[in-house]
Image (tube, rainbow, N blue to C red; front, side, top):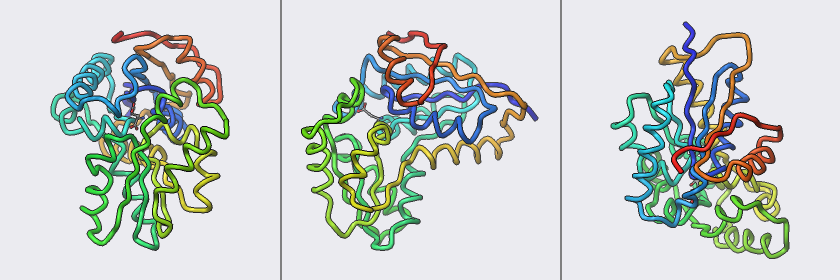
Length: 264
Ligand code: DGL
């Protein structure tokens, strides 16, 4: 069976492009529609009720474009409204937290994992609850890294000061942890700066795990698009199109065209 409808993916900004990139790699025949809420990013320091309203609007917007699956490619939005969107949107909806946690639990030998995320994801114990639901023995250390999302949104600069900021977060993790999860989809964009400080610890990027889950789910629900040609990828931003294009092309490593403005 061939289901030609697109997969909808959204984030507060450009972070979810790390998830889109992985989905595109695994499922090149699928059409993808990305929405970045750049106008309202960062979500991580906002009120949950406000985030919930934004996400519901985005979910409804993507649903109106006739998608077959919705991927919340944002940890903060997953924390706040995965359940709500699953109830209110008529297509299957998944978030990012469950899959990164699963991978971290498989990789850890010390049973101690570190999570780097937005303050909101850290504050509500999103990863800790999910990990301990599966394995009660595991210890989870969560660090909220407040200014990183806006810094990445406006184009990360490779300076000693910025490197020291990353170091200050990594230094707050206990040395016994052996796995660190990027609990924010923006962080893989600046992965190399984290790698410098993480000194050989294993890194989990939930984008990869989420993409695998998308494949599994489409197979299970018989919704795969089994055509031979490559799928189309289109983009929406609530922010400035030129700004979005510049940073998105850098993250995806290729030129992109189809960008429209919506929900602004
Ligand atoms: N990429 C989002 C996440 O994974 C960032 C949220 C924000 O805008 O603060 O949490």
